[in-house]
Image (cartoon, rainbow, N blue to C red):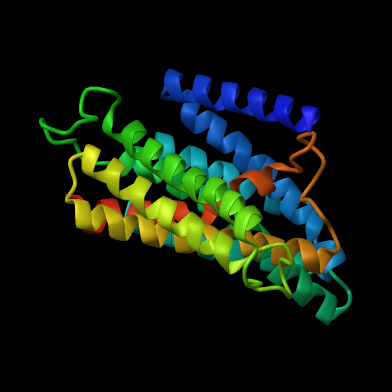
Length: 276
């Protein structure tokens, strides 16, 4: 427990420090997370039945994050990204003498490149966030991108925290027991209620209509839980408890960002569909 608490304190200090520094350090930091998450993903895939190699697949996610933050991505360039992954990794798989083995390398490598690339949407929030209304409670605190990144982080953390607390307190109903044996419906419900309230209030503080913010909080809760379960499915397929032992007491980077991989696209979608 002491080791876990120390690791949590160090992680929190790093996250807060990079957040306060802003750009370009935020994009660099997220690209670093994407690189580490990619390595962990590719190391989990072989024991899960996909005989992939680290290269070239691990390069895609950090490059995509840097491109999103520093270039001006258009719809055409964004559409080319998954196409490039499929084409390049297919050609890499051609070298396998066994056709079925090569196909598994292609499929597994494409998944391994695309899955951690969902961190692109964290940077997309920084890029796409609209200007905050003048009367917004959070209007003078940070720039719009960091304000909405704060909305994402605190909403996901509120879900995780209250899911853990309510799950430990009430212990009612197994949730997707075949994938994650320790999750309960009481935890899911408690976490969802917390995410709805926190997400709704933060969106309102950022100048948005409260009902829309409550809906966003609900969708973030659903997506974040799905992200956690999806990573558990990958680890369970690989026979692993954690994605790595990089963070003492906490597992790997993928264990820390799994919820954000699915929740960040929800907040980005809210910003481009509802917020303007």
